Amino acid sequence: MNITLLEAELRRDEGTKYSPYIDSTGNQTIGVGRNMKANPIPKDWTFPLTDAQVNQLLAEDIQTACASLDRFLPWWRQLDEVRQRVMANMCFNMGIGTLLTFRNTLTNIKQGFYTAAATGMRASLWARQVHGRAQRLAQAMETGVMPTT
Image 1 (spheres, rainbow, N blue to C red):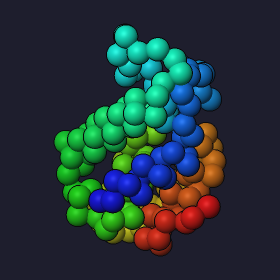
Image 2 (image 1 turned 135 degrees about the vertical axis):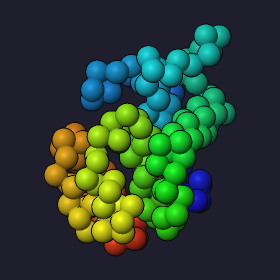
Image 3 (image 1 turned 90 degrees about the vertical axis):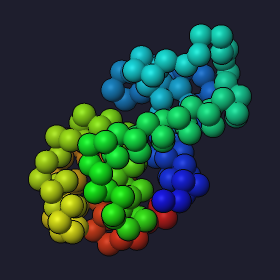
Image 4 (image 1 turned 60 degrees about the vertical axis):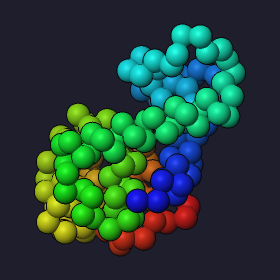
């Protein structure tokens, strides 16, 4: 999987913040969508963060998302490049616990029923919460091509 493309997509979807902020779900967040309660930053870091610190957090969070997918949905590595990035993006955004509640969608992805999977993605509460991101990822799941906007 092209990590550079995934990083760019996550930066587009999450934004990049060098100081803490409260996200749309009420969580204190920093960097590229890092929930500071669930994943605290080192205690000796000060704000604003540096580019290197933000990049370090992003790399750690991508690694965590991919390791979670490997553990709970090992078949995801058999997907094509674009669909792997969709899965990693979703896991990064909602966490593996919430992603695993998408039972029908995950079954459809695993079986290669990408239109049905995209329909499930679009019909979810998550899609209503993240709007354009969900539409973009659902389109990529359906077509195998990541939209540029």
